Length: 272
Ligand SMILES: [Zn+2]
Image (tube, rainbow, N blue to C red; front, side):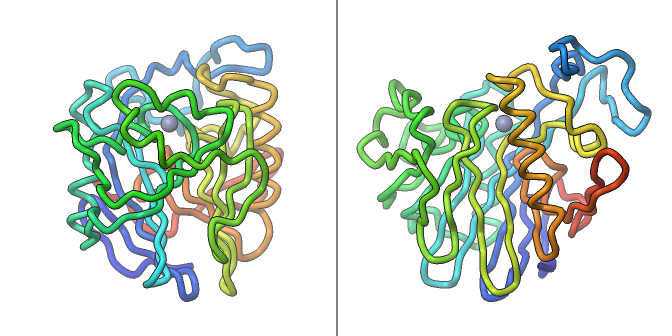
């Protein structure tokens, strides 16, 4: 897998015959007390490798568009204006910048039902962001989110309750823990696997080195920890890559074992 080109809000990669475009929705600042140890307590002092900006951790927010030139799937949609935070909601600009016409998008797959992943289905003006939308894949445990603002797309929801192929190069894989319906999307082809893993890691400067550290918003902390351990083991295989919603934009990396944990090596320099 390799970088082809990049801009301020997007980066385009090649995975064999597939194009993977990372789309930057923005960032969100969160207090370091959200990091939890194995007893569920906030972590004490953080290693110097973890950058703190104004007292907070700064989490990138990314979505990923994958296409074979004919069929395309958008994985996650950003926060739109739903978080009431002007640092997110850039996905529409990112799509424009990447030359992707969002009015042609038919398939959206969301990793889970939190606002920074699903709210972008509805644009800030209240219209459907993807007017030709035919299917919204989401873990069956997370479908209750399609009320209120998201009600207009509910009739297109496809609940995922087991491993299922969306097409012949992307498979939905349930990985409950962060939320009951958390789902990873495995993009696969002759050139390898790209696991688009949603919120498996929130703080990349810490949780690869120390995968047992969890996040306050992991709904089931032991289950989230086990899911992360399992996915990291998979990613340590040759020709496996990760795309993370909260890895530093553009958020695509290679993972290798190191000591009791792992290291990640980004495939592209930072954007944004
Ligand atoms: Zn998230």
